[in-house]
Image 1 (tube, rainbow, N blue to C red):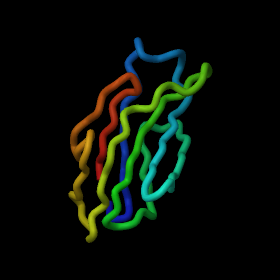
Image 2: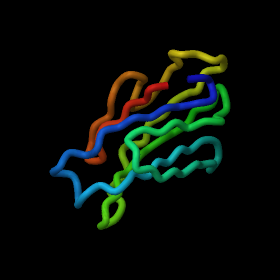
Image 3: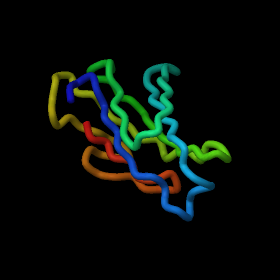
Image 4: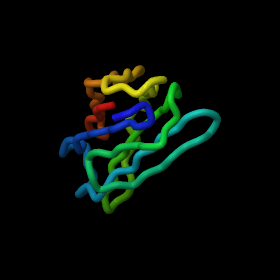
Length: 111
């Protein structure tokens, strides 16, 4: 990984928090004044690339089923380093190497 990427990995919500079979996930990455990137994926991991160094990004995820989109997880943040790094640092609800669990599942910030 580099100063311009953030890799996220998550587990599906537990059975009791699903409203049908999961068909995909919606990711939202926000920064600055109203800038955002939205991604739909069927995988349980995604790497955002082309990010700016030394910038705080906020991310969240929601599971989708045939019924619709579930609730988004609590928004978390990650600060991209000012120099390329294999360790980096994440702040907020999900520090690097830890997980966030709620009705939407588990999210790991791997950057």
